[in-house]
Amino acid sequence: MRIIVSGANGFVGRATCACLCDAGHAVTALVRRPGGCDPRVDERLITDDNFASLAPLPAADAFVHLAARVHVMNDSAGDPMKAYQAVNVEGSQHVARAALDAGVKRFVFVSSIKALGEGEPGRPWREDDTPAPVDPYGITKLEAERVLAAFGREHGMEVVSLRPPLVYGPGVRANFEQLMKAVERGVPLPLGAVHAHRSMVYAGNLADAIRFVATRSGPMAGVYHVTDGDDLTVPQMIRSLAHAFGKPARLLPVPPSWLHALGRIAGRSAQVDRLTSPLRMDSTRLRTDLGWTPPVSVAQGIERTVRAYQEAHR
Image (cartoon, rainbow, N blue to C red; front, side, top):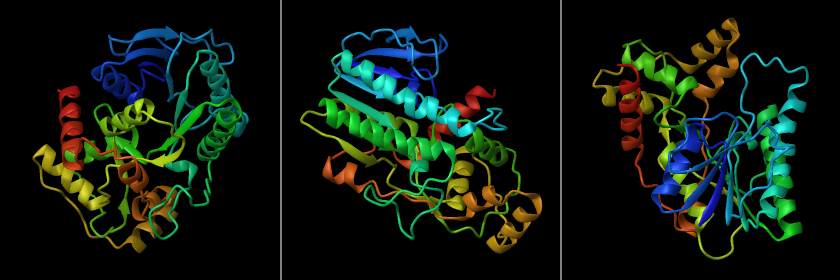
């Protein structure tokens, strides 16, 4: 198949292009800056973040839309919500129109757990639950899901939205990388008494799910959750990282109530909430209804992530 991928040289984009090329598909990569793409793809530069001036695309069977405005630390935008809408909503609409003109029959939009909210409704989120996003990123991801679904119904293009939770894997940055650094250095972590489970997905598993829905025969559309299918607690995650590093897990059993109190004092209540509260997704629909199976286990994914981290920091 001929498949176009936006955001192709990003963290998930690189894994997705490699997965598609390994499966024998012809990939056109849309990127803002050159470099970082799989050498097997046809790399094409775009000139703006919201694809408003996108040149005509080559003929294709499917389009995978990964490009987005993600969480921005110390956001300098005068109107952050407007900035997110310009890229995540308007940009998705521009891309969908260009994809339709290129003959694309199936459009895969990679959304986020943030489109659902920061917490869970007392159980894993299901696709038919009522979303309650709270930040500009999550709000605009949900809005993009809805406008793309409407566009697909209007123009006869199949639109599939995939919602991943925390994505980890070789090259991961942000909080997961900081956690690896702490575990590698043997820093004592006050998280031994945190028992809440959180869903995750290995980047290679997410890429395989994208390949699966983009190339699956027969009609399909709608929203699907994608996870590793094995939700860990934070202490379990730390122990798995420590095992991969060959180091002891230094976990202190500090009561979560103490952590919340310290978080309020330090002005980090949101960060503490994310560490101590459950956030799970039910991915049964993708795995049981469609028959997708994650090719990499959590233990294997963490092992590969740690190995890549060690190689990068030699």
